[in-house]
Image (cartoon, rainbow over all chains, first blue to last red; front, side, top):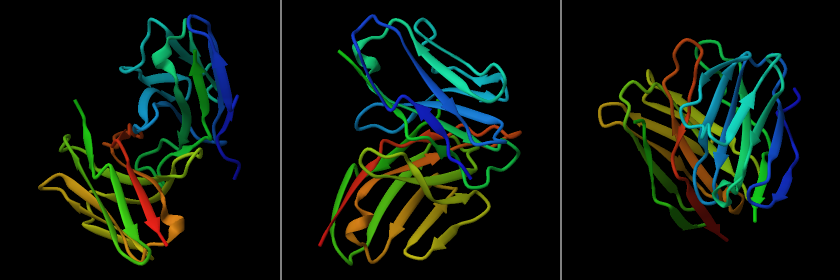
Length: 116
Length: 114
């Protein structure tokens, strides 16, 4: 099966600029997650979608981060304006989302964001 | 809130030795515990997982044990090889109604020396 697709792979922006990341999950996966992985740390959940609805966005800095999954498939994550501490790898993951998860999440390759 | 602690942060072993990584979790309702391996610059990849109704699971050189009472679980890698060198993350979640929010540990950098 095709994996989780993410783009771009790398992005360098200046602080206060805006940036957007795109994710296409595995076909048929109802649940989509965005994680932030700061260098040397474990991934931290930013937002979780079930189809096109938000399940959990409790750790999303809503003053600057936004995400959408309008048609229940692709998703975009936006940061506006970016801060230096937003430098991280942004990982998208998907899962079937039905009862017990078989095989856990499948992660995309991530987008490495550097804010200068 | 939910928290997963992982130890050690770095681990160095000689090829052929065993490696053990330990994690503790705070939410007693957690029922799913996967382990991910992340090589430099690559995505985390699931290597083994265990559910709360099982105490131990093994897959070739990798095994995971779970102690629900103590709220800790461990990854055991036997006969380590240089290609096992990577960062390993444990995670815990409470699967309910199809929702699965993984809380990750901080990671263990494993170095296997030939």
